[in-house]
Length: 144
View 1: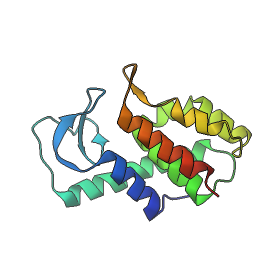
View 2 (view 1 turned 90 degrees about the vertical axis):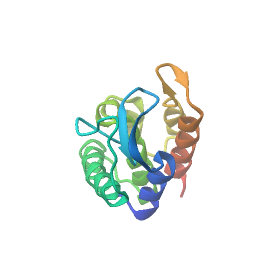
View 3 (view 1 turned 30 degrees about the vertical axis):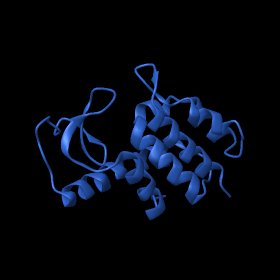
């Protein structure tokens, strides 16, 4: 599956667009729509076109992670919710998560919403923006 425009818009809304590199709450150099990696250095700037390109490239990596590790059929809303989640927490966290185990056991399990909500902290502190993002992802995941 691929992330639809609604899923991309969800990611963009929660990541925001920053054309100059900054440190995210976890202390990681970040630019564009939440792009991280060895290519990001504090002090650098990019164009909005490059931010879009980085988002598309990054999203492909996270979509592959979902497609390889989720073994049940997902709705587009569920896939979009997971795309936003994995984009934010990363593939390693997702593949080791109870969230993934519950989805693979029963994607209609109502406790899945609670699993999204467990991921609202950075360095042990609750981050209001992450709480809002997780609520949006959880609600999208359970939406018919």
